[in-house]
Image 1 (cartoon, one colour):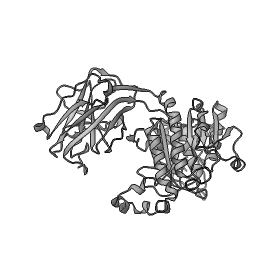
Image 2 (cartoon, rainbow, N blue to C red):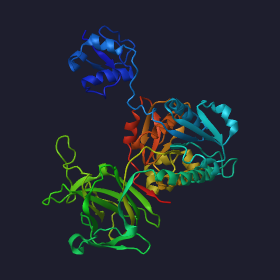
Image 3 (cartoon, rainbow, N blue to C red):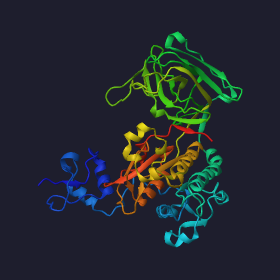
Image 4 (cartoon, one colour):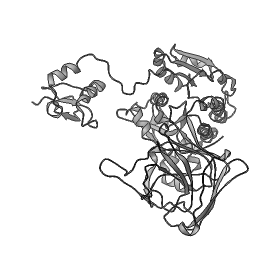
Length: 517
């Protein structure tokens, strides 16, 4: 019989030679070699190691059977952080504390805040947790932690209707969370790395040429408001599939933004979709293309922060994406070291991918701009446990029909104590604060539901069940990965093996548009 190794998964292949050792050691899924009985084995993949990898079988098995420590590619427990768990004695909070307690030996300190001393006995918190008590409706119980902790996990929740005991949905899920945000906002925002690209309140140097109406089907202008911001306005008169109007900022010298991950615009919109265009110094005079990314705005008087990752900008020429060949998805890659131009336009009838935008309309437009900055992703400072379905009461009739299975569930139909609306207001306060955050919307919490593979989803359509331990593990993991920052995600679990956390958080998109307090 051909010597072989059995693995429980085939998705990791093909292996480089050195990864055979790491894979087998990490998962400890080597069954046996040569003569083996398969009566009780489920063989999902069989690799002829000698032929595939050119290694000596006896030597390999000898190494694998050594009692060596299991390698952990996502071993972030050694990061020294002081973490506060709000709602530490709750059914999810106590699991979070148990998860975090292993970090104390690496120098971290774990603080717990609870509203009820009577729940301590049931919680059975690890001795490593420094537990205090306080009324979340009184911000003084949170003030002592400002400047003392590096991160907060919010696992507190309301316990009944408004006015019930220690607070209902409005008091806890909305106002108490907003109070925490207000306390930590200035402290944590001051530590974040950003670079001002253009500050419209100080009338930075730049040029804003208008596009002739007859050339592309519209007119535009730029002016400064007496209130300290810029206004990009005009009129779209044609629905042709090109950018209708635009303004550009030509930088005197190329900007080196290689240390940053994206740009953030402080804007006040009108409900239209807009497009950002970047050009670098590698652009040849004979070529006319730019790196583009689109974003939507909300109508009204609320200022919004729009975050766009540089990795989401794609090369476009005359409305067509410039695809590459072979392993290169795109023909060009943005050189962040030499940004020479930033442009802004009203998106045309066709989006960047060439599809028709159903929300496109002709007529006047106006976009107020306060500031454009470059930002760096960092691990979230605030991780919030929220709930799936918080936006479903706002769905229109078409959405309710399409996602009937998501809308016609008890929590949406009953909405006890207006809990969904209040949780959403709490989320909005977090997103608008500027604090690096991650919001985890859990589906139905059920301790009888088996732990398994955690599925990440967005759009607030998820329906399912998830064990509280899986939720706790997800909340803790979010504190450690920059790819979890500025994201809102729903989670549920299905049978199967967990994927690496980094892969899970990278699979969902960053919140591009949030309000501003």
